[in-house]
Image (cartoon, rainbow, N blue to C red; front, side, top):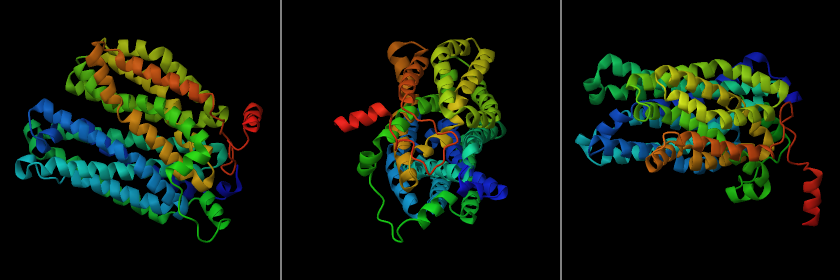
Length: 448
């Protein structure tokens, strides 16, 4: 255990965990209410028939992913210069403020094309802030946690992911049942968006009261009084291309599974499997509850046996079983519930160890920027497009199992990349796992 993290008392550590997790929960709360309320949002803010309006709303949802890499580079470089705490206080404020404003946009009937235009602008603000939010929160969590328990404490960041998404989905579903279809279309869909304001204020308050991480403070004390401007993406790639490619390759598998299970599954279960709307919403919610329970146990196990075995088990398990489990989901509501839960449990070993695995691959001076940039570039290309790609493959081929085959292909990418991932469990964040290459790589570099 490194000396910096070991000096943090439990109360401070627990506050740091809460401050990190609530930002992730706020981010995914927005995804939950948008994904589960897209029918109402499209009818209120877009022109055209129902199908066209929904398509426009889904495309607008994807726009946020286009600007996430820009946010990752901007906020990451700022966080490596000024500290993690200040950046995280700003990103959660921007993110929750934009979500709140979505609920305040006047309808298309009142202001015309200004309604979808305002939504696009707000989605871009959300994407830009989210580009720094996740990388910063994971870095903050990793730098506060003791080295020998980083997996356990880091798993609570992903607990916040599922909790935020579940809360958003549950609120949209609950208001729909309570208010009825007419009231939801008229004004009810806006209420869950307004909940983002208090969530953001609570998160900003928690983060503002925290000191910056012990690791960053130690690095700052040993650095120059006036640090140079943060490096751009090209500079980061030039000097840290190996860990950034490893993170990017693993995120391909990670986020295709993630966004397929969390964002696309309700649509798949309803349109492709034939479940009722309520059944299609209930199945992922039930599965996420099982996943939330298992996350801390998976994180703790990774501290004992390492991150690589956890990822290997998850990737191999998904590759072998994803197609049979999709076939099981096609048998009806009970099969859909069982299949989703098993898929979620196979995914948990990856999800639980993200913030323990990825930040530890980079040195402190560029940790935030490198992680946020690599993570968000891969997410914008593969994660955010996963629902559209899965749906498009079904439309082209007519095969309802195409999402499973797509997940298998990305798991292969993850398995190949895992070969180059160093084990980071128990390793001090002061160490650079890529600083000492394998003998063969060292020989190759000498020859070059």
